Image (tube, rainbow, N blue to C red; front, side):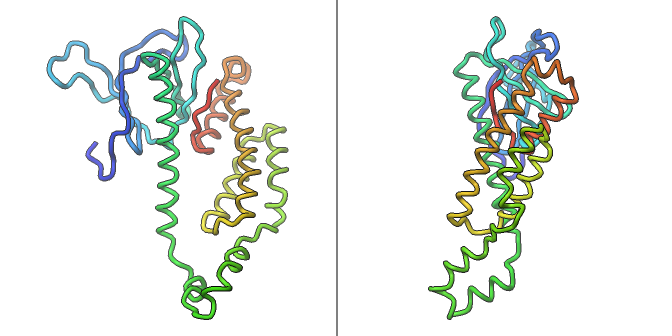
Length: 249
């Protein structure tokens, strides 16, 4: 665990349940780091300070977190979904469960943002941009206009993107929808955030919300039984590509 830059964000005791028959399996302690989640099993007969044994380590990008609605006596639970497996844990109470869901979601988003910034810093400065930035005649009046012009949103696929996303969602082409989102993110990642980009993002974010809700619905008990393991894996895979959002069933 002695990894440069890694630090503890949150931790606590949980009880793991069998995914198939919902019977308790073992008591565990989960350690949420800024880049991974470590699960350790409890050693009931161990004396001294070391009471847990390493069980598993998951990169934050490798799993999705899904809230499990209370169904007494089963309550205060959430799922960790990793292709092709899943694990289900029970928190001490509803307050602790809420903390786990919120902090997991926030930590995963922070890592995505940090990784994106790191990639942007590694991209070498374009010779054209460097030439423009050092040109004394282009410093004041031309720079704002250039920034707007640099983001070409007139491309046909961008103009049609919101509608294409609607079609993909309606046709349950989840992979196609996420592919379109990845294409847009790749296109905009090094571009300035202009007003037109913000407006486009706003339209796209609404589709992302709808897509996420549909994917989470696919993981509900009724849909999972109807669609089978393949449909469940498909939904989990796309949720992970969307950024592993924490959503409720």
